[in-house]
Length: 138
Image 1 (spheres, rainbow, N blue to C red):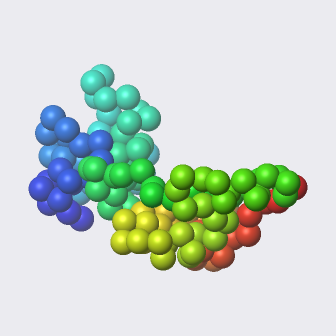
Image 2 (cartoon, rainbow, N blue to C red):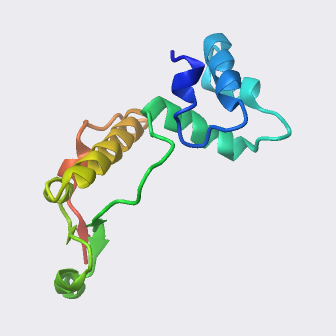
């Protein structure tokens, strides 16, 4: 539960949508009901789903690109090319998070999104997978 001013700081909010989101959150009794209360001809359903997720995760309106390359999978022969990248590159998010304050902030947001996703699965996954998942190397 947030005030409209807090929702105004969320990515994707504009044109008074924070007021509509505040009212819908207070009245909805399910996620589908929340989307129904938010839906208008002006806002596509996909935008509203992104908005609700960003609000739940607390993603700021200005979300910069990560200042690193987080490799989730690669061919074994291609891994040495990471040394030539213009940004810090690694397969471990924890290593990338230590490359600077902006990288730390972005990695925490990434971890929050992965944890939220883990909770929404049929079989709930453990928290912290963004930092512990191994890359796929073929």
